[in-house]
Image 1 (cartoon, rainbow, N blue to C red):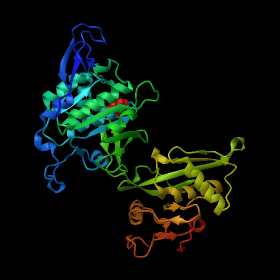
Image 2: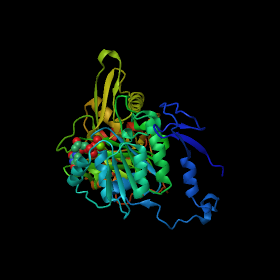
Image 3: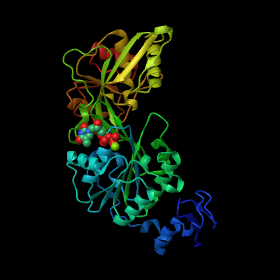
Length: 459
Ligand code: TYD
Ligand code: MG
């Protein structure tokens, strides 16, 4: 292989492809030295065997390809643990708990290897204080308070960690392109170089990225395409934290990781079924509907709340930030057409209690019934749960896992469950729950059924 040679200034790190007497960047004389490109240095260290294609059938799967992070909720979001040689970007607003999660990961990951925690934002003492609070002491964690990329890469080279955490990528700079961290070029270059180093050593790399409202500092978005997995840490209620993958080369992106911020760090929410329910006694206010929604591999019970009031200024508007407002408008239009309920002169507010964002189609029917209830002031009988997709033609469309949704609702004490019709010979097993489950095909029928407490099946 032809070796690529270039020249770098010993003073400022500026690179040239040919030798020059004077560095064009910093003006120092005789400072350019010949160096081999990093790519080629790395290539030379790879044995010849690795460079030839091998039959797919001969690929050795014996060796464990993932680390168990020691945190089930994190494993779940990553798709079964941390892929060796992969880079994970963890984004989120300041104060959400990114550093906390990473330190807990460092303490809990199931490996005997060394762990490098690079802190560019906090002092060693601050990290130590947090570790004590989290009881995250572990002899194999090494903390490095550094923001210079070369120094960090040197440290990785020396200690050969199996897990590298960079807190945060926006604080790291490469002197090759100046010394101001956080510019898009810096963030991209540093991500690229760290990625490269960690990949060739089959380690795991976690980069923390702050999401800021102002555009001054380059957000994590600019490096999403360079990493394997992108996780966003989101806040639902005051102390509930939701971890979601928005990109995952090695697993699904629909799983939620649920945590609760406590005095001793992030606790995993083991039984989240009723996490997002308001606890109410007695009658249910108008506009409130409970729905079992499928998030990843779990069913969560959520409460939809709607408020419908005369439009201010004559133009109907939808205010909904937990559920896509276009979906709410569409469902209001379906109600308007098929049930003759006017919404054209109304402002519509829709919320999900507990702050969970819901995008699943199974929530459609609950939104329709919630809007209907809010508009008519009719309230739902207690212990009622509904789910199903609603088509523009006013039909209740089947959704996935009808049996599991029913089971979750029953386990939570709901007695009247309304949903789509079940296809004969399908995979749904409803043997235990048929008495409580009412199947419907048309939106007007299910609404009549729910509000009349009509328990006869309609199809
Ligand atoms: P932190 O992990 O520093 O957030 P980030 O790195 O995303 O900016 O967490 C910050 C918040 O979490 C801070 O307000 C204090 C709180 N916290 C707890 O409530 N309990 C704890 O055990 C820890 C470590 C932090
Ligand atoms: Mg932090």
